[in-house]
Image 1: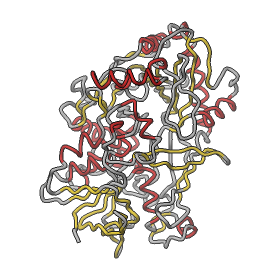
Image 2: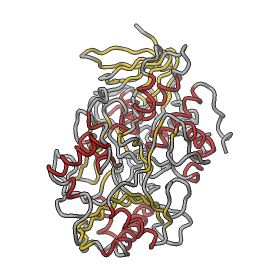
Image 3: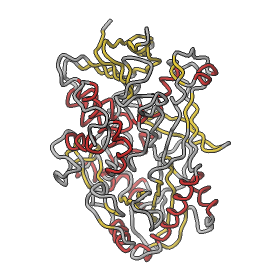
Length: 535
């Protein structure tokens, strides 16, 4: 039986980075395990085709999540090489330096993370203290969109927001075109940037369609994982460490079915308790995007070009011939960081806006656009403090966990959400965009009170797909992992993914997780400064 120095579980943003960096040493043997298949779907390359991937159970995991006592929604995660970076909206946001400040005592503050970004990025705006060039991850700032987008930018300027080329350069109210993991009109996933270029390294083995069933622990040490592969259960052994990089949902799920988690939860699911760790699966934080849509008074936007079969065919042909047009853009065309109230010292909310509007969702169907022209705005509380949870209900690792979202349950989150929504309405009542809109269609002008706004956000909003915190790091024994990302109570086991983040560090999580994994490789190899050394 083959034995590796490192067994990495999950080939998403973190797993691909770890596989790349740990195999730089030709004497280090690495096995990368991915439960899904290879990223061969043609939709992976087309940026705006992400909804086709997210709604297909062959390319995305579908987790049921409770949004209320009797309501559910689906949380999707990438199910292929590249993980969620192969299916996501491609927004790249590092977070402001102050977002990383709470992690400084743990060794993960902005100075250390900034260095990681400078090394891994290839940013089209050139070098700067907060970004990098020449790295493996090629980025773009796409401005070739509809004229409506420019009108929304000008509206933001009228609101007092600063127009910027790089939304991460400062931490004031600002609006602009987002940096995206797109280059030459094609998606740049973590697999494209970090894994495929090193696939021929003889010390790297990648195994797809390999569902990890549990972590193998002997004598208090993780020695490998049990895997379902090609109809058989096999063990993959690690002489050094097992590195869990499966994400904020799959990683705590795997720990719990392996006997590491809240004792009562494990016993109720029929799992023998190896280690009672109450915080595994707790502390879940997730973004809730509030939807505001308007009907346009005249023609314009993407709906006519993408809302019907003929328009989609033309857009596809344009993308195939030029790698341009609306299909070459990220999930939404514009972004802004704003204050929910003017007396704040920094933005506490962010917006995504686009010159199109979504049709009412239909079960089993990918995102569809309205036929009539419209505009969409999604508003999000950037740093929510509402906490959800994840818990196994069965010893079978193939049974989805019970996820409770708990959106907007704290006074802070509800207040920011309501104030934010009113600012969104103010935005669309300001010129020049006010001259282009005819009427609010979602949630509609009848939604006025605080209770109605929060209800609309939960009932008609969108999951941000930014879950964090379910295996949070910290300095005391209550936290699941220590500042070096080692699982407390089990030697040879680390977690390197969004689950270790105790706070939201950006409006979008792909970039922070990529930088986290980049630095984690140095921590694992003993090449990084310890906690408190990075400022």
